[in-house]
Length: 109
Image (tube, rainbow, N blue to C red):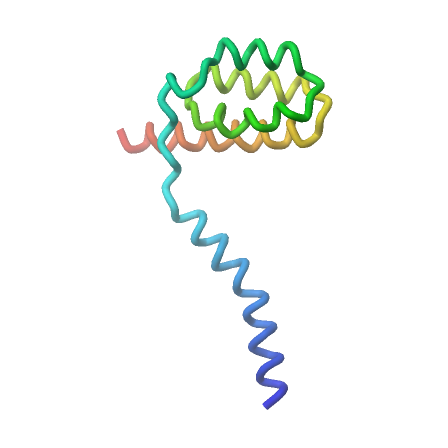
């Protein structure tokens, strides 16, 4: 009986991440946030003034959800200009998700 328990535990440990990943892939991407949600001029100014700051990481998700070319440009600026690895990583992630949303929307038109 003990071998069965260990075997099931191993199966659950291996299968759970696969189930979670497949559930995430099936969910549709969220719609972009309307342009009024962020003042992109203020965000741009903050990026210029604080490019070395790790605090810019908090801007990456809202910029990615914005869905505009200007917001994507600001994410690219963070990728190219920030010395902070976390900021660059989050900016890259949310830029990719923004591209994905745009592709899915153009495919449904």
